[in-house]
Image (cartoon, rainbow, N blue to C red):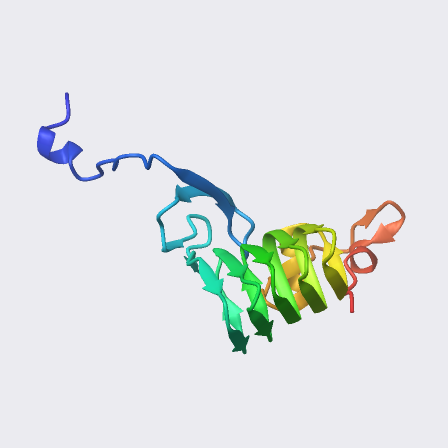
Length: 174
């Protein structure tokens, strides 16, 4: 029996956006596509809200800044504090703890001090880098900076794998 037209309208599929960008959730690392114009969205996997505002900073900012969008720091811009973003493009001065879930790029004549955890890192000729840099996957970057809480590993029994018990293999780090 075919569906009635009224029942088919309950779950209509909206039009696909013309320009999309690939993102992944910093909480569960689920990769998905969103519209280029999206300002905020919920992760389809863990349903946590994500903000995608792009910021252009050309003055001195102190404190915490958190967005999954791109942060552009101009030549006169200065960021002091904790920065969590999707991408970083800096031509100014950055000082503090920085977590970038994508690409971190330092232009010529920029200065960076503190800690940086990023998926990829580019420092152009002429930039000054005086920071500890960790390059790795998103989940590693998030957990080392203390920005994401994860569930502990579930242990089931004392099964021996490779000569070690589960308790020995999944020992807490730190």
